Amino acid sequence: MDVHLSTTVAEGVAFRQLIGGKAVDAGSGARIDVVSPSTGQVFASIPASDAADVDNAVKAARTAFDSGPWPKMPAVERGRLLTRLCQLVEKNGSELAALESRDTGKPLRQGRADVVATMRYYEFYGAAADKIHGTTIPFLDGYTALTLREPHGVVAGIIPWNYPLQILARVAGAALAMGNTLVVKPAEDASLTTIRMAELALEAGFPEGVFNVITGYGRDAGAALSAHPLVDYVTFTGSTGTGTAIQQAAAQNNRGVTMELGGKSPQIVFADADIEKAAPVLVNAVIQNGGQTCSAGSRILIERRIYDDLAAMLATRFSALVAGPHDADLDLGALINSKQQARVTAMVSQAEAAGAQILARGTVHKDAPSGGFYFAPALFGGVDPASALAQEEVFGPVLALFPFDGEEEAIRLANGTDYGLVAGIWTKDGGRQHRVAKRVRAGQVFVNAYGAGGGIELPFGGFKRSGHGREKGFEALYDMSATKTVVFHHE
Ligand code: NAI
Ligand code: MG
Image 1 (cartoon, rainbow, N blue to C red):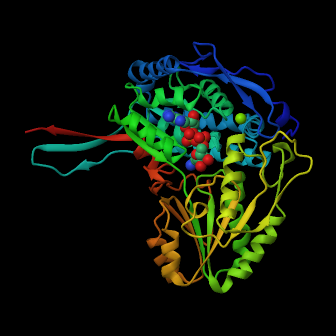
Image 2: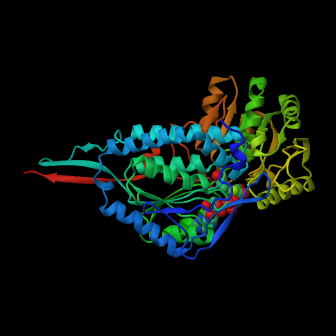
Image 3: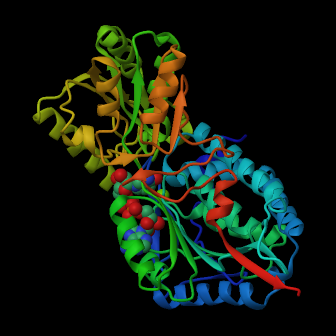
């Protein structure tokens, strides 16, 4: 792949959104600057849509669902279109990786990994489209009862900026496989690959109006989309507060929602664990994507006997981490924007003021542009389990260590936040693996491994404030459809 492409891709382009198969500007003509987090410089622009634009997009999706060729298309054909989209992602992979990386600041390597995962989503859901079916139900004499799995209709997808390509694929793969039509609102900070994917969907042969993209601010375009009465279902990944606002908006129309709202995911390391093997996984789980990952493993609970040894190993690794521009492809890129940089910086200062100790700090590369939104990774010990650093999502490269004594305390600490997205358990004791996996409140539990993202076939979602509904795997196909029961009476 061409590294040069990553700093020139999309230079000066005035992107347009896709409504009903047409590339259009916002009706008002308003635009949002697209900023490279690596430099802080503007390099392109996207439409700043308002409620009127959203209305056009929802109506296009409504028409495509109600009367286009889409509702009559057999499941196998929908699957083939998704498979074709997978092939187009592969064909355009280096451009998509460069675009994602420049738009979000993530290292090019991460952009490429995102492209691979994106292909896997469209591959999986393309193959799954004709493999989900209803049941027949034993009922009264003289009756036959069966269930059909039907699409909701128009699905609104509100996408965050951390993994736009992947999260779009997770929503679009499942929604389109089940026969819904889509209106997607990517984040104002990272809309470019979503626009590009809608173009590729047209090229793949999805009928007009099936895959619409509206760009703009959350408070304008996002709020109008989640409250639109012609939307049948809303799926959202992002912050807990915005998730609450979106659920309230959807509740005005009594529409269903899937909410994926982040976490404070623990990894529990028992004294018998292979810490040499665990250490790189523990670090990567919070460093990947600069810590801007909903499933980041941001707390490590360590059995007291091995606390000092493992803390020292993690400190060595943290000190070696370097952040820099996306195309330099270092351990970390820049954070998404200056607001996120200020938020992470403030949370670290507050933790220090509250008495937590920084055990190690990575660096920002000396040649990194001064306008970029960089943050040197920080490893904390001595963190009060009730403090903000232990309880709140930082969404940056910040890791907190906590000692524990015994299984009960480990479970109490692991479950001691309002979140419940992912957990890791490191032990060789088989009984303990099963006991702890059952008692930890998290939508995904890894034993002697950790997966932040990836594993397209693995159902994913939260308990508690991490949200509800399940994405990925076959489970997502149930969320993206509704059961209809049909009863025949035949004397
Ligand atoms: P956000 O949750 O506000 O933004 C995510 C998406 O929601 C964007 O597309 C945005 O335009 C849209 N949005 C915002 N307000 C909306 C509204 N009222 N109605 C409908 N859509 C709306 O997240 P933000 O402000 O960019 O980041 C703040 C914090 O959120 C981060 O520091 C992080 O802790 C968390 N976050 C978590 C993510 C996750 O994957 N769990 C992803 C992004 C952010
Ligand atoms: Mg950007």
